[in-house]
Every structure is written in structure tokens, then in C-alpha cells.
Image (cartoon, rainbow, N blue to C red; front, side, top):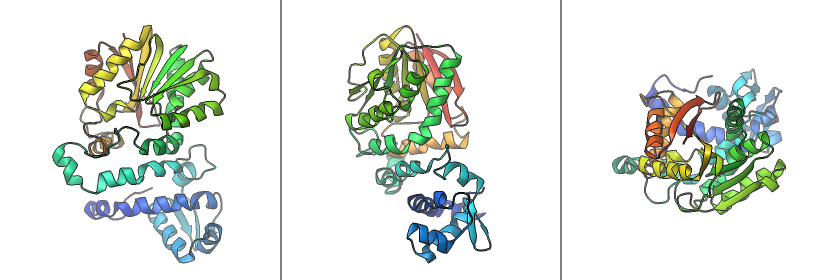
Length: 334
């Protein structure tokens, strides 16, 4: 599969928004699931979706250019990547992530005036760390399929290390999947989730769906301000530290240290680039998103996390890539 339209990178990058628009339209029209294992004409797809045959034909041809569809004469069928990631019948389907990635709150923050956040060294106004930003409700709903595998890999890592935490804290829980997967793996575990109240409604619903209502508690508010409690065997910090500068990260890690039991462990799950900060591509590119959407966030390296842990009074145990996801788990202890 190729993502480039032209051999000229300037041309291709300048028109990259067209790829996003095409994918968004195809997901909203449910084209990939409608095709499934079939080979369909534009007219057939138009009949299923209720869209214009001309519009469907041009969209599907463009999706072929992008490598998401293939074409035999006048019939369209799914590429291997589309079967895996865009057909809703696939257990690996990621279609809904588009609702977060192209949310107006995100796109406008990135595209409206990129020079401003480059000049300022970070975003101003309503950002992803603003209190009760509605974008986090979209995140909790849309990113559940993406986070599911990472959460399962996190629980599997815990199981391999023979950890059986009974008291668990999930900070900035979002959809709640990290704490939920831990509670599924450890039948005695009770999870407390911290996040904004409107986001916690989604986490609590997800917990209830898998029968964890009685073992899932919630504390609403700003993670910097609310009382976390203490004596936790496991504290989860999934995808929160990258939103802040290193001093703020140390502050949160310090709260984690104070909330641990004597043998407790902290799991930081995050996007971690290599020390050169330009590889791997997906992890390295994440820093730009933080520049555009947060005042001081960044994609931190393992060495930077180790230094922040030390400053907070924690010991860096090691890191584990949660393949095939782009996430890394970093283990810290007292």
C-alpha cells in the first residue's frame, strides 16, 4: 500500500488533506463494510449508501489511488489493509478513530494558524488540556478500538510479571480500558478512575458492559488537584504525561509515588520516540501534534522518562514496546 499520490513530496504533502477527507467520507458512508468480501460497482455501492453514483465512483477511484480499494474493470474490492482496519466486521477495525483525529477541535487547532504555535512554542486558547474540553468525550468514544489492543497488551505484561494488584488507579482514564483490562485479568482488583465527569460516564459504561460495575469506582476532576488516595498496588498513567512539560510530569509522577503501596508499581503508557527524536516515524511525528494542541506537551524519550521518574523519587525499571501498537509501557517503582 502506498500513501503517496505523487513522487513530489511537496505536492503530496500539500494535498494530504484530500486523503483525510476521502477516508472520512468513506467511513461515514460505511463503504468498506458495505463492500466487505464482495466486488461491487459504483452503482451498487451508491445504491447501498444512498449517495450519488458519480460521487461514489470518483471517491472509490481515489481510494484505489490511496491503496485502500482495488479495482477490477468496473468492480471495487477491499485491499488487505482495508479488510483489516476499515471493515467493521474485522476485530482490528479502527474506523471510528477518524471521529477524533478529524474532530473540528483538533483540525482547527492544527490548521488555522500553524505559524502561531511554532512561534509561541505551543498552543494557546482552548487546548487539549483545557478543563472539560468536549474533545475528550469524542476521544473516549472514538479511540476505544485503537486503545483496546494496547490495554490488552498492558494487562498481558502485568500477567507475565506475575503481578496481581488488588487496588488499582487509572489516571486520565478516558474510555477506561486500561483499568478495565487489569480488572478482567485480576478478579480481586478494584479500579478507581480519574478524569472529567463527562468522560468518566463512558468509562463507567464500558466497565459495566464487561460486568465490572461493582469493582469500578470514579473520581471526577483535574488529576493535578483531586485527592488520589493511597496504598495502590498499580497506578496507570496512560497517554497523559505527553500533554505537559517535564516539571508537570514530575509533579504527576510525584503524586503517583505518594499514592503507591510499599510494593506498588507505576505503568506509564505513552508514545515514545527513539533518542534521535526522528524515528520511528509515527512516534517521532507525535511531538508535532503536541506542539499544535497543547501549551507545553511533547513526545518524551525513554531517557527523559527515566530522568523525570528519578526527579519524582521513583526508580525506572524498564520499558516494553506494546507491539503491534505504537505505544510503549514504562515500569516505575519506589
